[in-house]
Image (cartoon, rainbow, N blue to C red; front, side):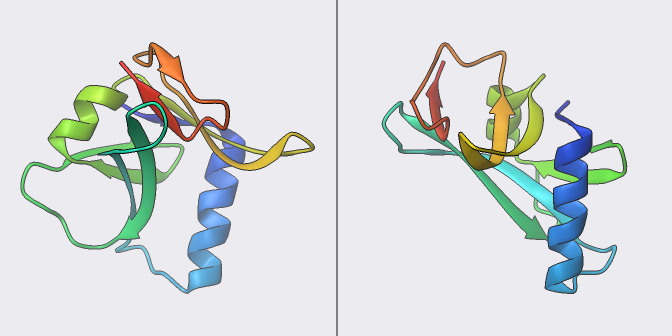
Length: 108
């Protein structure tokens, strides 16, 4: 399961509202090859279920992960920060053995 903090929930809801997306949309959380550590995180809004999707809901945020991403992200917490050290979504991933300085890529 992937969980979200209150700040991440607020930001996801705000972005969905700004984009004019209805309740049929959900947050697609995935992992792709690339980045300086080997794997990168990806967030998108989607409204089409794909074969093998795993669905989770936390604090009212509905999320879909493909099976490969689920294996890398199980137990991850999605957070949002808007502080002086950077603004954006952060992944607190207990499976990551190494992350890059910007936090956008990781390895296991």
